[in-house]
Length: 504
Image 1 (cartoon, helix red, strand yellow):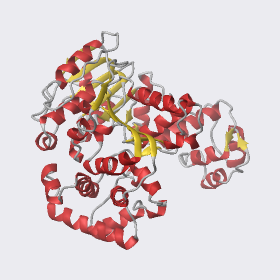
Image 2 (cartoon, rainbow, N blue to C red):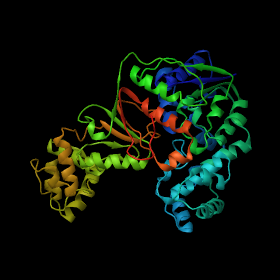
Image 3 (cartoon, rainbow, N blue to C red):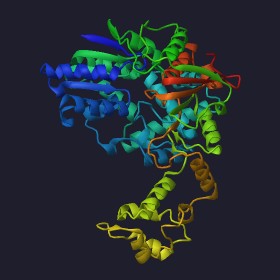
Image 4 (tube, helix red, strand yellow):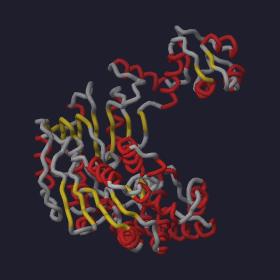
């Protein structure tokens, strides 16, 4: 039996899925015969953590809470050294004269085929997308409408990539899916849940429909066609809409307030092909406002999620906020201030408070110490502290020749540029806590923020030529619908400044 669960924004889709698992186990189902497949590694891990907490089971009992790539990897008996990654990409770059900047550990770890970084990453992303879409390179190139890339270079990379994989006898994540389909066998499941199913590309749907479903007794597809935002990766909303004949809609949001719900509903009704859904907002009025510039917003307090259509726009906003002394988290890049500096400040403040610190923490601290307060020999001593011991500030002064006291300000102790000192000073002047651990302001593209939420959402309606010309209107509407529905209380719409903008 196959069932599709439609979960509009904030309607508790994961909670419902966990309850299905809970009921199945209560009825005597073996947890090892339950599969919870998610689009992203993060989502799969979160579902597993919640299931363990609510179901009184051990993590070893839920071995099939994973991504499709992870399932294929496991069933094919692969090892880490069998995967094309890390140094392999550097070798590929040398062969074709391209640079790959993306962290190899991110390669498809969150459902995305390749995280765009340098020019080489963009070419490789296109190669991988053509494979999961099951289209030719030429069609993928034409559909992408990336005016900075060249088709001949794409062909060269694609051939070199396949040749190098064969030479090294390694497979990538797309190969895993293809090999799994070709093998045609999978573990047998009493219950199979495919979460975020609206985001599956054609190749992934083949894996599900041709191999997993025939080996499963009960199947649930969970997602929301209105939040299908990976069309550039070949995702077809029709695959999700047609997944099963039995459908149910979660009809109560626990996040989206009335005003935002009304706007989002008007927006999504512009989509031509969709499942009609009636769902209710949370019992909160909320607020929606229009602005010409982000500096019209009061960012001094409260929780903020700033969303943009592209990384280019996100980077521009990040630069402006940094110039104005705001501390923020940039999704995919981390804090607006160097993590080393943040860690260094934290260690120094602990030492000044008289705390004993482990040698390992102090060794990292030594790397950012200014040469004005410690000699080279002192730094070497600091780096070779006994790992079994802990140390105070007085110990460092006595044993390592540290020329500083508890009254010495951190900016005199740490190796920090004048620009960073000025930025930190500005941040502190605003009353921001450097070491709060939780970002008050987050900047993200809409795609990276999917599943996130905040009291205040600032949604930029600027887009780009490539987005507008390569994607259909339905796809763009869905992207901005996802952005708008992240708001728990207030939605602030920033009007487009250029020709390529979204007409909300």
